[in-house]
Structures are given as structure tokens and as C-alpha cells.
Image 1: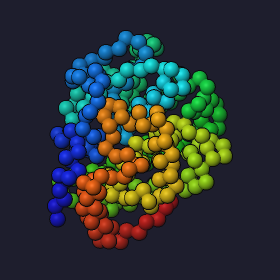
Image 2 (image 1 turned 30 degrees about the horizontal axis):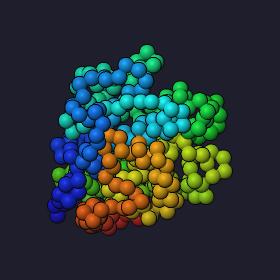
Image 3 (image 1 turned 135 degrees about the horizontal axis):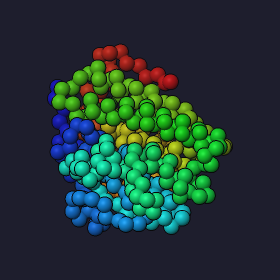
Image 4 (image 1 turned 90 degrees about the vertical axis):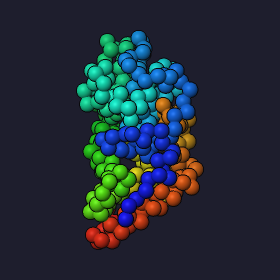
Length: 303
């Protein structure tokens, strides 16, 4: 049975993306940004001072823009950004690989720190809080136990949810040949990991911190991925009620909303849910996922 993506892909402006960045197609809405940064294909750095962000609207890309919006709101930290349409492979051009040799977004250049380049979303979160979050509003002192706990959960995102959900999205949405084993394997592992996240958020508002927790870079590391769970895997947020409540809680923050809009409006606002066209595409894909689970006897368990 062939799976048509036409309903879902009509919402994207990047139909020519390579499979190395497949989830971009799921998470980015057509470009309606009015910033001068989007006026032309970037060919190099623009700023001479402050933080310059090079990004696109992916689960990893929004990590940097959300934190920068939080720091701007809390401290007045100004930053500039350029949107790199990864469907054009601009991120593979020499000027960008001089900043990130891996040719992936996001990356920042701190023009106020000798032009230091930082790449990988979670490394950017750590750098920005250590250098600019002087009141520890979004992190903790580096020698504190909660800083270590935050690093642990950020590592869980980087080594677990990110790659597993990414592979699930590939097999469910983008593989030309639908491989039932691959679909149930990676969707199932993603669900297992979300079960761990859901258990962590039981009786908590945020992932790390005393009591019910404190909003921090640990939460920011996850939010882009969690926002796209259903689009990439067909798994409903309703399966993880604590995660769903946490996601909506984060979306109440204006800086989170602004961060998701750099450089493009997000495809999905969880407060509204999928559009009718998105819901139809999810339902079509879910038939394949459910059949694959049945074929291999998949049963949800976590951890």
C-alpha cells in the first residue's frame, strides 16, 4: 500500500529537501516572515556585534531561537538571525561549514566573544545560559546538582528522543518503500521514551528543579520534538497526558511562541491541534503504523 503525502506536503515550502533532514517537511509552514533576514539566500554573516543565529524551523532549530527570545525578554539581549532554507542546501556551502563543519543548523556566532561559533542546539543552550543568563533564570550554577540533572535530561533528548523520533518520521513519512519492521521499531521506541518523559512529569510542571520544577533549558531542549510528535509518528499526545499538559504550559510563554516563529510560523500550534488536512494525513499514515505493530506483535511498554 503506497502512502501519499500530498495533503501534508501542501503545507510546506521545501518540497526538495534531502532525506538527511526529513522532519523539516513536517515542522515548517510556508515562509511568511517579513524579516530582512529572509529577503535573499544567505551568503555569509551579516552582523558585526551581538549574537547571530543561523537557523531554520526544525525541532533542533527552535531550541536556539526560543532561548534567545527568553534572554531578550529577561535581559534585553539583542540578537540577529538568518533563515537558512535547508531545502536549498545552503547549510552545506563553505561559508557555513566554516561555522559548523557538519553542515547542519542551528549555529550561532557570538560577535562579542571574538566571533566564537557554537553549533548543535544543546551546546548553544549551554553556552548562552553560562554566558548570558547571569541570574540563572533558565538554568543553574554549573557546580549545582540541578545543573547536572538538566544536563542528564538534555542528554536524554539528544541521545534518545531526537534520533528515535527522527527515524520514526523517516520510516513513517518519507521512506519510498514502506518497511513495517522499521515503522513499528522506531515508533515503538519513541513511545517508550515518551513514557519515561511522561513519568518524569507526573506531579511536576517542568523537568528539573525543586518541587514542581523550574522552566529551564532542559524543557527548551524537548519542546520542538514534542510539538511534532503526532506529525512525525502518528502517536497522539493523548497517550502521554503529563507531556501534553507540559507542552501546553510551555506554549503559554510568549517567548516560546516567538521562538517557534523564527524564521517561519510553525506548522502546528498544539493549542489548536492539527488542521483537517494534517489530521487526514496522520490518519492515513496511522493505518500503516498500526498494521506494522500488529504484524510484529508490538505492545506498548515503558520504560
